[in-house]
Length: 382
Image (cartoon, rainbow, N blue to C red; front, top):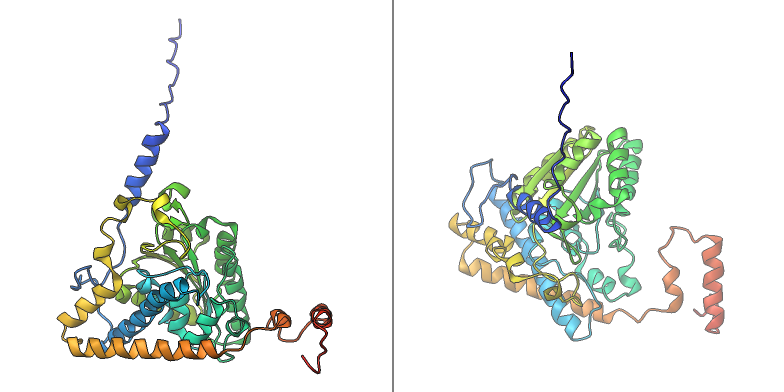
């Protein structure tokens, strides 16, 4: 009896690189399953109960404050009155909606792009301006505010937030820690280590993953084949939520639920806010070198501030007069803060060593003494 020879298995050839890229891009665009309470035209989606009118107006007020800071920051930069800073216009719902779910007793670990979140939790505008002027008056946060300085390194804030959350847990409080990251940062090792660390120890931590489509000049679809970044939570046994990051009401809703869950001792949550970086990476960046009008198409119609404005006007909660009064109030607040920041004295070289530790280490004391000696000064006349 002769055995019939089996045909050798053939492996289909992989698609050419361009085709693979296009397939990944198409999958990313189709992964639109996310929680949403109001559509881009301001109408309710019926997906859940809307926050009360007072909360909706408060969120709108905070978004207007954040947008005004971003717009005035551009002007100040061009005038030479502000250093290079990363604009966040178009991402206000993602930042305000998440930070608004916290209290002053909670921790906030922002990235360099999250000025709007810090302002929402209570960072004074003058301090934020001083920070982006590289002034020591912006390096130290108010003592009653648990906001860390804006993180420039990518993803390092995630493990730090877990540590702060575990410290609160050991102290027996119900305070939580919230940390921000971008889609690019979610490919860093610190991101995964933090999620595993927090999940294993049930840390009261809320992780905000702002998927704005770009890691500097690299689109999300190029730096990962994943099309739903919230699902990365499943690998660490924690809940993951995907929300429309341009819908502040939806963002606030899911974040408040995650914060309450953490306060109950039920551990961390990962929230992916799907938004878009309509502005350059920084005010010194030229995005036309790496993205096209086709990349940006449709996002202006999803503007988070105009979306909530339309909703509030349709609901009779906002009128033309109240809108004008709000914009005037926001502008006056900013100009008063700008005057305060302008009045801060010029920094002294030794101030670079302040606010590193609560109590200066011996090394810091020696370094401070060396700086003062080079200036011909002493502690008495510094």
